[in-house]
Every structure is written in structure tokens, then in C-alpha cells.
Amino acid sequence: MKLLFLACLSPKTGNHTTAERIRSHIESAGHICELRDAAEFRSPAEVANLVSRNPPFQGALAIHLFRAGRLLLDIQVPFGVIFGGTDINEDVKVAQKRAVMEQVLLKARFAVAFTDKLKAEAELFLLSQSSKIYVQPQGIQTEVTEKFCWAEFLRSSGVTSEHMDKMRVFLLVCGLRRVKDPLYLVKVFSEWHCDNPLNVLVIIGPKIDPVLTVEVEAVVKRTAGVFLAQERSQQELHAAMKRCFAVVNSSISEGMSAAILEAMDLGVPVLARDIPGNAAVVQHEFTGLLYSSHQVQRQIPLCSAGHYNS
Image (cartoon, rainbow, N blue to C red):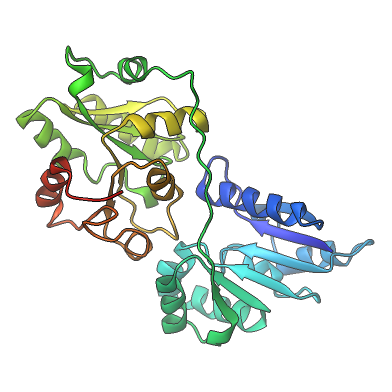
């Protein structure tokens, strides 16, 4: 079978990683899967024209109900959609987008949600047939490089201490973009660091939003106990995650955070913002800690006490 697969393929984003993983799985099953960036197309008509070319595509798949799914509305072959997270958590709040997503969901052969909660949210906000939506959690794979020096990683990130081996390094893994809200915990961690210099926060991830990147760099430069690490390869990132005290998530919205899943696979504690996508993965005080804006100062000390099972 020849399939067209549309997704938002901004470099080094979770959507891109997820799309590549799904494409590889489809092709390993013996099918042809052409992965294309939704940003390449201006209208559903352009996609319909591509699908009908000889040899034609026999089906299609899209990640994100609005950004990619709307481009499949004019095609004449069956298609499925995978919820991206922000489509169900954020875009449904906009009436015009919600109307388009309802059309996509009604026409789709099936839809996939990464969590039961995401499915429930889709059923609540969209006119959908529940039998169309299937829950399929993401799969992840971690690989730790053997050629990794923890002390060098910390020094290159600006962390200096005579007690490197005793430091509690919290690693915020995220691309620098607004939805990840990388500055959300900066003040709290800085205050915590001032109370105990062994506690530090290191932010690491690709610089996706240039404007936000400048803002983050400026804030980090003048904030004690908070550091910005240079982007590393996936294997080096996993090595850093494995050595850190806990992995932090501060996102405003998540479908299913790959960084959280990777941390769990590596046996590393997780401190995650209490949003639907994270709460569907992290069981509070058992597989990690969930915090909200008024709880964060209470929850961080709990994490240092080790009251969790990763």
C-alpha cells in the first residue's frame, strides 16, 4: 500500500520525531510511506492533486487534527488522523478551528489518541463518533552513549562547583518555544539554589523560536542557579538525562511528552507540570511528581526526598 503521511515537520520537534518513528514502522511492515511537511501545502486541493497522481496514493495519515488533518478534506481515499496534543488541548478553544476539526474527524476512517484522557477530551469538545477513536500510547527508545563526561557537560553549560558529584541537577528537556514555557520555573529554582547551591536547573534543547531563545538566554544569564546547555545528540542527551537528579517538564500543553517517557525508560525521576497530557502519563508520587503553579515550591522538596518510584 502507498500512503501519504502529513505532519508538522519543524526540525527537532516532538512531532517530527514521532512522525519519523511511525513512518519507519509503516515501512517495516512492507508499505510505502511518503512523509511530507504539512507546511508545504496551502490548501486541501493541493494535497488532493498530489494523492491522485499516477501512481496514486491508496490512503493517507496525518498528525494533528487541524494543522495537517484539514489538508485531507478533499482527498478521495481513506485516511486516519493522530491527535497531536495542541489540537485537542488548545485549538478546540477557537470556534473556527474546532469546526474544521469536526469535519476532519467525521470524514476520517479512524483517529488515534495517545492517552485515554486525550480521547475523552476529543469526545467532549468535538462532534465525534467514539468508536472511531482508538487509544494507542507512544513507543519510545533510549540509547545512551558511552562516550559522555558528566563533569564536562556541566562545565560547558556554565555550572562550576567543587562538589560536582554531590550536585542535584534538574534537567529541563525542551525545544525553546512558547508552548514549552521554559522560563516557568526559573525563579523558583533560583530561589532554591540560593538556599542550597547544590541544586541547579539546566535547560537543554534546540533553539526553535529565535525571539524566545534571546529571552531565555538573557534571563538565564542574570539568574543564579539556572543554566542553558548547548544542544546535544540524542544519545548524549539520554546520557545526560540518566545522570541528572530529575527530568523536568514545564509545558503549557502536551500530547504525550517523549522526554517524560524517555526519563521513565532510563529510570530517572520526573517532575512534570500538571496538565492533561502529563497527568495521563505521570502517576503523582508514584511514577513522578505533578505540580501546579501554587504547589511547585512544596513539590520540589518532596522530589529531593526521593518519595517516588520511577
